[in-house]
Length: 447
Image (cartoon, rainbow, N blue to C red):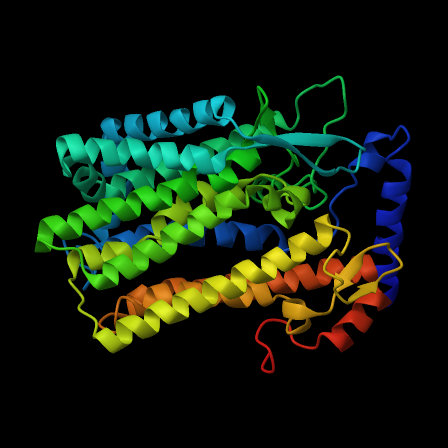
């Protein structure tokens, strides 16, 4: 194991060293030899599972069954795709929505920032106008509700299944497009992902073959990460708020706790949009089905489950429990935000805050004080507490609404596992020393 890690470390250092020079394609884009998700069969299983989960979650929580049982027989699943495909007006609305966001991507004012230096020495630029795009989109929706009532928002809630179908197909089509475009001829060698260049179709299709696919200066991965899905998350939640009002004549405290918490979370991501440029999704992952499905379909389909449930079930929380959920939500958000701020300030201000750190032989500095002295991924802890509070806001009438917190915990633990492997490969013994100082991974004094 040790020799394997050292070999990968030397390979990475060699790539960095030669990136300043002319590189052969095989040197710039080494073949993927180590596989994640248990390889080709594993990614096939994950792709099928992700698709089935969004289908089943809609099937067990919709307007027909009020989220208290499976909607119909097996024929319901058979009809699921055909019913969605036939709703051309839903497809038209979704195409219009994404097109609107693409236009805003290009025309909205905002700082253009540089990303990290890539393996080939290039530095790409990105517009940070996602927050303004979201605000303008939400204002358009609010204006329409003010002028015309909640009819269109209720229509979105009533046609939710068809929007899920549409986003699922959009994910597949976009993944196919970026995969086959990664083989295009170019005057400059395309930069491929080191984790999605195996030569095996299904594996590369899932992991993403090209690192930064672009279309007419639209960075597809960057655009999808924070715009269609995240802004769509807000819009779908608002649609279910309208549906609850239509069904019960009021918007419950539980619904307000869920939607307010999730809106703050999305807007926070857009306020700190430039922080995305240093994440693994942008710097390391290719753009394939894993990210396309997650961004376009999974987020607006799965993350809106609590609001969907509440639109058909008027859950009334006690005052005490409402306050508890609100406090947990605030605590989770503050841990998430302040830990990320500490890390970003440390990276961008040459340690103006005089934080304690461990300097590695690779030249990186690892924080070991403040929030980051408590756990190696303390931001994940806050993120999960925030998600848990949103589930608690639905009460205890149906375990289905806790799917998000269980899934999110698994996701964060898996991401933590992947991060730790990458860091061990990069820093070697320095990472072992760091782990001996910051002993806990996720939950201080527990794990």
